[in-house]
Amino acid sequence: MSMEAIMDGLIERLHPALPGSALGEVLDQLIYMTDDNGSDLIEVCRRWIAGEDLRRVEAALALKEAFLFRTREELVERLDAVSKQWPQLASRVAEIINAWDRQNRRG
Image 1 (cartoon, one colour):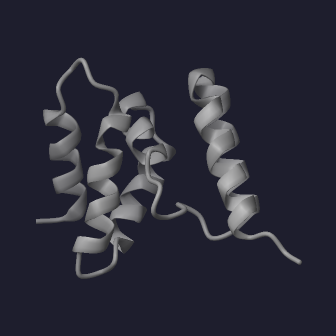
Image 2 (spheres, rainbow, N blue to C red):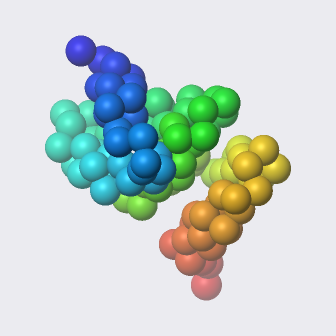
């Protein structure tokens, strides 16, 4: 079974009253529990970020144990698009970018 199928199953079975971000801790745990250290999971989250499903975007943004993109430029570009499409997610986008900056501070 593919990681995408597993994650799709989780999001589809998530209680309708819950936002996609409710899966954040589960996805964070899966990063450490999978034999690829979350590589497939992160790739699925990247696709979700670029998609049209708010709950999937919320779930992908809820990751705290990994960044979805390798450079700040790509992170900002992709997440700015999310903020424009869903302004209610702008504060989470800002948190992610600030976390990147804190972790990658030079000096």
